[in-house]
Image (cartoon, rainbow, N blue to C red; front, side):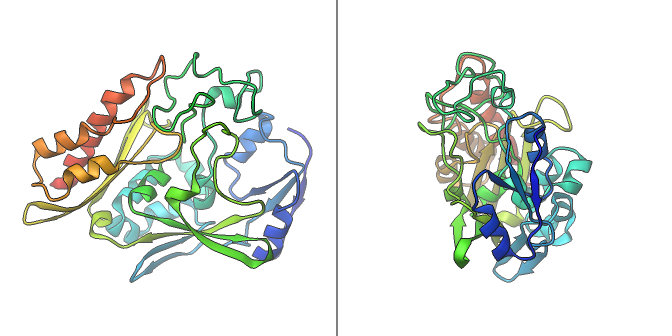
Length: 325
């Protein structure tokens, strides 16, 4: 790991001004960035420490949930109101990483976690996400854990995080602060970018911008929700396929449905076709199976991850059944 200068600003304004400088990165919990720096994937000359600068409160408001960017993953997962009214969010956090990492990892950092593609994290290989134009060996190589949705001829790296999948399902937004007091709110669905022909650009954040908070609207679907994750081992493993689902059911009829999936896309992936197949239908097993069968529509498998197409359908169906009871 190369030497770097650590900058400790006193407030958000000072942080974003420092963060807008060249060869600079933000650090909070550091659970992902420090790995990348040790692997020489990230080599910033300056780190801007966000500890004590951004909010870490978990606030329950009439309109929904607001989580400060520095809130720890473990604290959000264990919050009684989150468990009661945003069950899938709590479950997604509890399924992530390990207790030690959840105690350190922040909500803002988890939103921006980098891919676990082995070619990206090993500088001995070419990678368009690291070095544009160098190639994507994953397309013809070891791609078992990689994406089948949102892929391009330049990149098939999977977005690895669990929590953003649940946030995507329930229309979360992120509050962002930038240089010169430029504040804005971004729907989570517009925060991420699919790789296209520029895999290195993963989000729509502008230079110096930092996530300040995440807001999740209150809804009956969020309250009646679940997160189902299938992985190679029971803990400390990234999803092969995961699903965050929520439904509002009245008199046996599905009034609202929310479905998003992880482990399958280059970003957390919303499933509008599955949702449309559920709304207005009776909450019955055959309805869930028919809707879940549409989960893999538009997917494009590589040589080693075709199994995900069928697994997506099975995981979606299982998740829907789990919230119908």
